[in-house]
Amino acid sequence: MNASKILQQLMQQAGGGQKGGSGSGVDVKGMLEGLSKQFGGGSQGAKGGGSGGVDMKSLLGGGAMGMLVGSKRGRKLGGKALKYGAIAGVGVLAWKAWQSSQAGKSSPSESQTSAEGERVEVLNGEYQERRSLELLQAMIMAARADGHIDKQEQALIAEQIDALGADNEMHQWVEQQLNAPLNAKALAQQADSPQAAREMYLISVAVIDEQNPMERAWLDQLASALTLTPDMARELEHQAQQAG
Image (cartoon, rainbow, N blue to C red; front, side):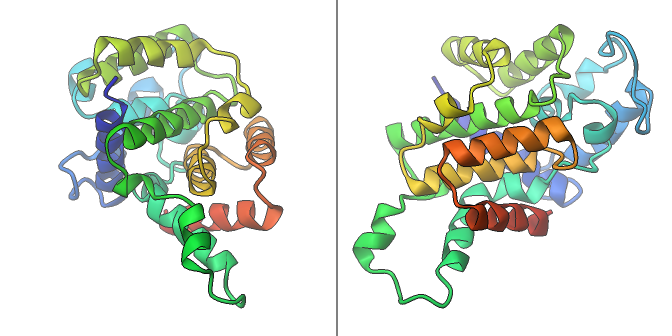
């Protein structure tokens, strides 16, 4: 699979969306706002099947992240809940959250720091591929947490991932994730380090509306499964909100 390539492009798109499109050349926020209008606009969105009005030409090659986290129509398509900066800098922000948790304590030893694990941005080879899969799965599960992704939207998401260059194995994996049962414990078991766990939680926060009861419940389940302390979960949410 080529998960690391897909995740890197999604992070670049998020960086571009956060800056109004100037970072990566992809104006994700503008694209999402345009989609919102096509779906019916505002917080009402479109009713029924909902995907028929999407201009696929404007999406292909630039909208995978937007479709993945924007498929909930009005709220996410308007960009109100989507935290672009948290997606773009997931590894750095998760590490920063750990550093904040160490404030006031004695400086951690080199072995303690090493035990925390590496950030996704600095991993290489199979380690980067594995972490990328973990984070992509966390994003998909979070996007599905309120149960509002229908079959048409699933097909659009798969098309967008393909447009970023997903190979056949990656395509099949995405389709499996879009239909797999939501299981926070199974997802958490894939985290190979405390840093990986923090990144999985933070990227989930980035695509979730904490005010939605179903989505809040998913975050709470995930935090528990990842064995994050309440303080760490709050700090990760704070980092995501600050990143915007």
